[in-house]
Figure 1 (cartoon, helix red, strand yellow):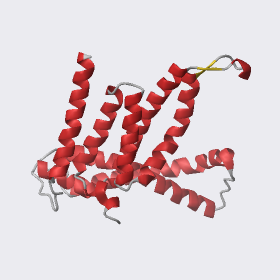
Figure 2: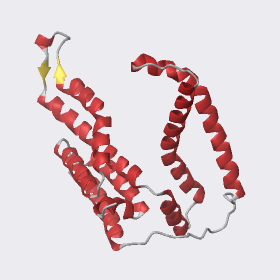
Figure 3: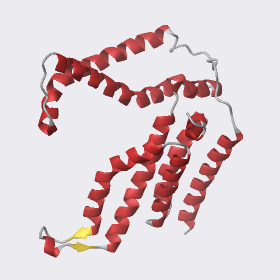
Figure 4: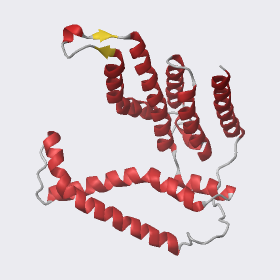
Length: 243
């Protein structure tokens, strides 16, 4: 890992959550359409600087269908006859603002997802003395999608080894859902039960202060970033209320 690629991973876990929350708040506070577009550009640039170009590309890929839909809904008017279609500049501006809001939030969220380290986050929570139950709920939520995807891929490969033919295209994927759903749901329920039992055996329900093994360092840069984002959100809210 290069030093640049590790900037987001080396940040304090709380800083990443503050960045996502700040991006989501500012996306709806700054005036449209210039504000959301500038915020999206800034979020993408920061993600590239911190070595998360993949998050920028994945966010754009996820938002692309929504961008097209917004452009059609807001920017194109007229009947179904192509000769009567009209383009509205105000509608396109509204679509660009909405799309930029989605892009900024999606990019920041995927950077958090890529740089999130469960052990560092739990150590940071234990150092502050916060609720371990809430912290574990956050960790389990963020890790659910990758586990779900890996288990689904393993079950699908096992079904194919037993003679399942899914084919290609949408029809093949639909046919694969029936033999995939039952073992996937049962497997996830079993895993959840095993995890709950293991956590109880490790004292999850004990109401005692936990000792962090390796708490992440409290750097000045993290504090400055968190306070700066908070100040921007407060200033934006005050400006919108007084404007």
